[in-house]
Image 1 (spheres, rainbow, N blue to C red):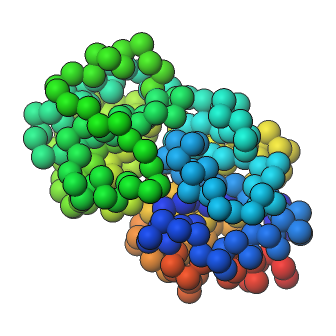
Image 2: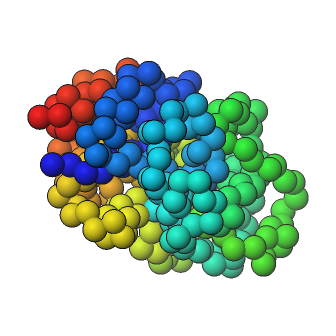
Length: 273
Protein backbone atom coordinates (compact mmCIF):
# COMPACT_ATOMS: atom_id res chain seq x y z
CA UNK A 1 0.00 0.00 0.00
CA UNK A 2 1.24 3.48 -0.81
CA UNK A 3 1.81 5.70 2.22
CA UNK A 4 3.12 8.97 0.77
CA UNK A 5 2.46 11.00 -2.40
CA UNK A 6 4.95 13.78 -3.19
CA UNK A 7 4.02 16.23 -5.90
CA UNK A 8 5.56 19.07 -7.82
CA UNK A 9 3.55 22.28 -7.60
CA UNK A 10 3.61 24.43 -10.75
CA UNK A 11 2.19 22.79 -13.88
CA UNK A 12 1.51 19.58 -11.89
CA UNK A 13 -0.56 20.09 -8.72
CA UNK A 14 -1.50 23.66 -9.54
CA UNK A 15 -3.37 24.62 -12.69
CA UNK A 16 -1.87 26.95 -15.28
CA UNK A 17 -3.64 29.79 -13.43
CA UNK A 18 -1.84 28.78 -10.19
CA UNK A 19 -5.00 27.53 -8.50
CA UNK A 20 -5.77 24.09 -7.04
CA UNK A 21 -8.37 22.10 -9.03
CA UNK A 22 -11.23 20.95 -6.82
CA UNK A 23 -10.71 17.37 -7.98
CA UNK A 24 -7.22 17.45 -6.43
CA UNK A 25 -8.62 18.67 -3.10
CA UNK A 26 -11.29 15.96 -3.04
CA UNK A 27 -8.74 13.27 -3.90
CA UNK A 28 -6.30 14.40 -1.20
CA UNK A 29 -9.00 14.38 1.45
CA UNK A 30 -9.80 10.79 0.48
CA UNK A 31 -6.09 9.90 0.50
CA UNK A 32 -5.74 11.25 4.01
CA UNK A 33 -8.72 9.14 5.11
CA UNK A 34 -6.78 6.15 3.79
CA UNK A 35 -3.68 7.14 5.75
CA UNK A 36 -1.67 8.46 2.80
CA UNK A 37 0.52 11.50 3.40
CA UNK A 38 0.38 14.41 0.93
CA UNK A 39 3.76 16.16 0.48
CA UNK A 40 4.27 19.19 -1.81
CA UNK A 41 7.74 19.20 -3.43
CA UNK A 42 8.79 22.33 -5.30
CA UNK A 43 11.70 24.43 -6.39
CA UNK A 44 10.07 27.32 -4.57
CA UNK A 45 10.55 28.40 -0.96
CA UNK A 46 8.47 26.93 1.87
CA UNK A 47 6.51 30.16 2.40
CA UNK A 48 5.69 30.46 -1.28
CA UNK A 49 4.48 26.86 -1.42
CA UNK A 50 2.27 27.31 1.64
CA UNK A 51 0.88 30.53 0.18
CA UNK A 52 -0.31 28.61 -2.88
CA UNK A 53 -1.97 26.04 -0.60
CA UNK A 54 -3.61 28.49 1.79
CA UNK A 55 -7.14 27.59 0.64
CA UNK A 56 -6.72 23.84 1.15
CA UNK A 57 -8.72 22.29 3.98
CA UNK A 58 -6.51 21.85 7.05
CA UNK A 59 -6.87 18.07 6.85
CA UNK A 60 -4.95 17.96 3.57
CA UNK A 61 -1.65 18.99 5.18
CA UNK A 62 -2.18 18.17 8.84
CA UNK A 63 0.93 16.46 10.24
CA UNK A 64 2.66 16.55 6.87
CA UNK A 65 5.87 17.97 5.41
CA UNK A 66 7.03 20.20 2.55
CA UNK A 67 10.06 19.61 0.32
CA UNK A 68 11.27 22.98 -0.98
CA UNK A 69 14.15 24.34 -3.08
CA UNK A 70 14.19 21.19 -5.24
CA UNK A 71 15.02 19.03 -2.22
CA UNK A 72 17.30 21.58 -0.56
CA UNK A 73 15.04 22.00 2.49
CA UNK A 74 12.40 19.97 4.32
CA UNK A 75 9.90 21.63 6.67
CA UNK A 76 7.20 20.36 8.95
CA UNK A 77 3.95 22.00 7.93
CA UNK A 78 3.43 25.02 10.15
CA UNK A 79 7.11 25.47 11.02
CA UNK A 80 9.12 27.91 8.91
CA UNK A 81 12.42 26.61 10.29
CA UNK A 82 13.58 23.68 8.11
CA UNK A 83 14.50 20.37 9.72
CA UNK A 84 16.80 19.70 6.73
CA UNK A 85 18.61 22.43 4.80
CA UNK A 86 21.42 22.72 2.25
CA UNK A 87 23.37 25.80 1.19
CA UNK A 88 25.08 27.03 -1.94
CA UNK A 89 28.27 29.04 -1.42
CA UNK A 90 28.02 32.78 -1.97
CA UNK A 91 31.06 32.81 -4.27
CA UNK A 92 29.36 30.26 -6.57
CA UNK A 93 26.25 32.43 -6.77
CA UNK A 94 28.36 35.54 -7.35
CA UNK A 95 30.19 33.88 -10.24
CA UNK A 96 26.87 32.89 -11.83
CA UNK A 97 25.52 36.39 -11.29
CA UNK A 98 28.59 38.05 -12.81
CA UNK A 99 28.24 35.77 -15.83
CA UNK A 100 24.59 36.63 -16.39
CA UNK A 101 25.34 40.34 -16.08
CA UNK A 102 27.58 39.93 -19.11
CA UNK A 103 24.94 37.87 -20.92
CA UNK A 104 22.57 40.83 -20.89
CA UNK A 105 19.04 39.59 -21.58
CA UNK A 106 18.85 36.87 -18.94
CA UNK A 107 17.27 37.49 -15.52
CA UNK A 108 18.06 35.82 -12.21
CA UNK A 109 16.42 34.66 -8.97
CA UNK A 110 18.45 34.17 -5.77
CA UNK A 111 16.84 32.24 -2.89
CA UNK A 112 17.83 32.46 0.77
CA UNK A 113 17.51 29.59 3.23
CA UNK A 114 15.11 31.77 5.24
CA UNK A 115 12.73 31.98 2.28
CA UNK A 116 13.45 35.39 0.75
CA UNK A 117 13.70 35.59 -3.04
CA UNK A 118 15.68 38.30 -4.80
CA UNK A 119 15.17 39.05 -8.49
CA UNK A 120 17.41 40.80 -10.97
CA UNK A 121 16.68 41.97 -14.52
CA UNK A 122 13.16 40.53 -14.54
CA UNK A 123 10.78 41.34 -17.38
CA UNK A 124 7.19 42.43 -16.93
CA UNK A 125 6.19 39.02 -18.30
CA UNK A 126 8.15 37.24 -15.56
CA UNK A 127 6.73 39.48 -12.85
CA UNK A 128 3.23 38.78 -14.13
CA UNK A 129 3.97 35.03 -14.09
CA UNK A 130 5.10 35.24 -10.45
CA UNK A 131 2.24 37.44 -9.29
CA UNK A 132 -0.06 35.72 -6.86
CA UNK A 133 2.08 32.67 -6.21
CA UNK A 134 5.56 33.90 -5.29
CA UNK A 135 6.77 37.11 -3.66
CA UNK A 136 10.07 38.45 -4.98
CA UNK A 137 12.20 41.44 -4.08
CA UNK A 138 13.61 43.07 -7.21
CA UNK A 139 17.04 44.71 -6.96
CA UNK A 140 19.12 46.75 -9.40
CA UNK A 141 22.82 47.22 -9.99
CA UNK A 142 25.55 44.75 -10.85
CA UNK A 143 26.50 43.50 -7.39
CA UNK A 144 25.11 40.99 -4.90
CA UNK A 145 27.51 41.89 -2.08
CA UNK A 146 24.49 42.66 0.10
CA UNK A 147 23.88 38.89 0.22
CA UNK A 148 27.44 37.88 1.13
CA UNK A 149 26.62 36.94 4.73
CA UNK A 150 23.15 35.59 4.03
CA UNK A 151 22.70 31.77 3.86
CA UNK A 152 21.70 30.99 0.26
CA UNK A 153 19.76 27.92 -0.86
CA UNK A 154 19.82 28.11 -4.66
CA UNK A 155 19.66 30.42 -7.65
CA UNK A 156 18.39 30.28 -11.23
CA UNK A 157 18.45 32.02 -14.58
CA UNK A 158 15.14 33.06 -16.12
CA UNK A 159 14.22 33.58 -19.75
CA UNK A 160 10.95 32.85 -21.49
CA UNK A 161 12.74 30.93 -24.28
CA UNK A 162 13.83 27.55 -22.88
CA UNK A 163 15.77 26.69 -26.03
CA UNK A 164 17.93 29.75 -25.46
CA UNK A 165 18.58 28.66 -21.88
CA UNK A 166 19.69 25.24 -23.12
CA UNK A 167 22.05 26.94 -25.56
CA UNK A 168 23.36 29.14 -22.75
CA UNK A 169 23.99 26.09 -20.58
CA UNK A 170 26.07 24.48 -23.34
CA UNK A 171 28.04 27.67 -23.94
CA UNK A 172 28.91 28.36 -20.30
CA UNK A 173 32.34 27.61 -18.87
CA UNK A 174 31.92 24.19 -17.16
CA UNK A 175 33.77 25.55 -14.12
CA UNK A 176 30.74 27.77 -13.37
CA UNK A 177 28.52 24.76 -12.71
CA UNK A 178 31.15 22.27 -11.54
CA UNK A 179 29.91 20.54 -8.41
CA UNK A 180 26.38 21.93 -8.75
CA UNK A 181 23.16 20.12 -9.62
CA UNK A 182 21.53 21.87 -12.57
CA UNK A 183 18.09 21.40 -14.06
CA UNK A 184 15.35 23.15 -16.06
CA UNK A 185 11.79 23.90 -14.96
CA UNK A 186 8.54 25.66 -15.85
CA UNK A 187 9.63 26.26 -19.43
CA UNK A 188 11.62 29.34 -18.34
CA UNK A 189 14.16 28.48 -15.62
CA UNK A 190 17.72 27.11 -15.56
CA UNK A 191 18.29 26.16 -11.92
CA UNK A 192 21.44 25.76 -9.82
CA UNK A 193 21.36 23.75 -6.59
CA UNK A 194 24.08 22.54 -4.22
CA UNK A 195 25.72 19.28 -5.19
CA UNK A 196 23.64 16.25 -4.20
CA UNK A 197 20.45 18.30 -3.93
CA UNK A 198 17.47 17.32 -6.05
CA UNK A 199 13.87 16.35 -5.42
CA UNK A 200 14.81 12.67 -5.40
CA UNK A 201 17.28 13.24 -2.58
CA UNK A 202 14.62 15.24 -0.73
CA UNK A 203 12.11 12.42 -1.09
CA UNK A 204 14.63 9.82 0.08
CA UNK A 205 15.56 11.93 3.11
CA UNK A 206 11.92 12.42 4.11
CA UNK A 207 11.04 8.75 3.58
CA UNK A 208 13.98 7.75 5.79
CA UNK A 209 12.91 10.26 8.44
CA UNK A 210 9.38 8.83 8.45
CA UNK A 211 10.53 5.20 8.10
CA UNK A 212 8.53 4.77 4.90
CA UNK A 213 10.02 2.44 2.25
CA UNK A 214 10.51 4.21 -1.08
CA UNK A 215 8.49 1.41 -2.68
CA UNK A 216 5.48 2.82 -0.81
CA UNK A 217 5.84 6.34 -2.24
CA UNK A 218 4.38 7.99 -5.34
CA UNK A 219 5.88 11.05 -7.04
CA UNK A 220 3.99 13.32 -9.43
CA UNK A 221 5.67 15.82 -11.74
CA UNK A 222 5.87 17.42 -15.15
CA UNK A 223 9.40 18.66 -15.92
CA UNK A 224 13.14 18.03 -15.80
CA UNK A 225 13.54 19.10 -12.18
CA UNK A 226 11.08 16.34 -11.20
CA UNK A 227 12.99 13.50 -12.89
CA UNK A 228 15.11 12.55 -9.87
CA UNK A 229 11.97 12.34 -7.72
CA UNK A 230 10.08 10.34 -10.34
CA UNK A 231 12.96 7.87 -10.46
CA UNK A 232 13.37 7.67 -6.66
CA UNK A 233 9.72 6.96 -5.86
CA UNK A 234 8.13 3.57 -5.96
CA UNK A 235 5.82 4.92 -8.66
CA UNK A 236 6.53 7.92 -10.87
CA UNK A 237 3.52 9.68 -12.42
CA UNK A 238 3.53 12.62 -14.83
CA UNK A 239 0.62 14.78 -15.95
CA UNK A 240 -0.49 14.74 -19.58
CA UNK A 241 1.20 18.13 -20.11
CA UNK A 242 4.61 16.81 -18.98
CA UNK A 243 7.77 17.55 -20.93
CA UNK A 244 9.11 14.64 -23.03
CA UNK A 245 12.16 14.09 -20.80
CA UNK A 246 10.02 13.76 -17.67
CA UNK A 247 7.48 11.53 -19.42
CA UNK A 248 10.29 9.24 -20.61
CA UNK A 249 11.26 8.23 -17.05
CA UNK A 250 7.75 8.02 -15.58
CA UNK A 251 6.05 4.72 -14.80
CA UNK A 252 2.71 6.21 -15.83
CA UNK A 253 1.57 9.24 -17.79
CA UNK A 254 -1.86 10.37 -16.70
CA UNK A 255 -4.63 11.32 -19.08
CA UNK A 256 -5.34 14.31 -16.80
CA UNK A 257 -3.50 17.60 -17.17
CA UNK A 258 -2.59 20.00 -14.38
CA UNK A 259 -5.78 21.92 -15.21
CA UNK A 260 -7.91 18.76 -14.86
CA UNK A 261 -6.38 17.72 -11.54
CA UNK A 262 -4.25 14.59 -11.72
CA UNK A 263 -4.81 13.37 -8.17
CA UNK A 264 -8.26 11.94 -8.85
CA UNK A 265 -6.68 9.67 -11.45
CA UNK A 266 -3.82 8.68 -9.13
CA UNK A 267 -6.29 7.92 -6.34
CA UNK A 268 -8.57 5.80 -8.50
CA UNK A 269 -5.87 3.91 -10.38
CA UNK A 270 -3.18 3.31 -7.74
CA UNK A 271 -4.28 4.10 -4.19
CA UNK A 272 -7.86 2.91 -3.72
CA UNK A 273 -7.25 -0.48 -5.41
